[in-house]
Amino acid sequence: MTDMTETTRPRAALPPGQREIDLFPRFGRRVDQPPPTVPAHPTVTFGGALTAPFEIPLDELVGADRRELAADFHCVAGWSVTGLVWEGVAFADIYQRYVAPAVTPGTTVTHVMVRGLDGERFVAQLDDLLADGVLLADRLGGRPLDGTHGAPLRLVSPAQYGYANIKHVCRIDVLAGAPDAGSAALLDRLLQSHPRARVWEEERHGTVPGWLIRPIYRVIKAVMLSAAARRSESGHHSKVNIG
Image (cartoon, rainbow, N blue to C red):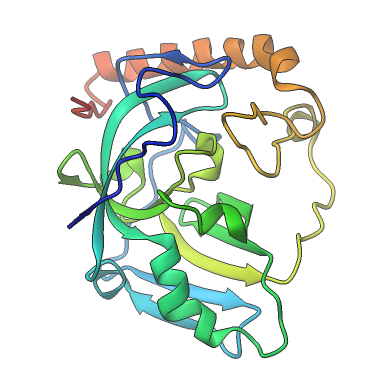
């Protein structure tokens, strides 16, 4: 297994506006709902600007050229968990092996939409996902992913905030451009996600500078961590060994 330990920044450094916490809580807009049910035989469907869509069984997708990635995780709400160890396959390897040969002739892929079984999705620039250290992971801390952290498969992109790290991955679409954002609810407009979500550039919000919106996200962080603590006390919180 190849080691993909992230070495682009000093090990002790955290991105601007981030604070380290001890637990890796379940997070996201659907945190009040149970994790989605994982199919008995998971697959990942590939679509978009391809000659034809196709699907690959998860076991086949992650069975070859496996990597181990030691990296930190940064939530847009301002908390970070350090020293996580993921296992899976490099996104770039999957793209070159399966996707690139199937792209419609004459098409230049610029973006990738990653979807989860929970309905979440993120549209990333292709270059961001082809970077070193981006993984499609099926294991964390030496154990298979559970529902809390994205079973059966999740995107791990340490250079981007958590909302870009889609959990429960079930579909990947390649695109020849960024899709129209369309209309959004008021809360979504107020907390408009940055389209690239790069942690070291503090790209938290689509229009407001990261440093300016930090106080709002700190309130969200406090609510999330309080909810995580209550779930832990009731026995429903999954604690991950991050040592």
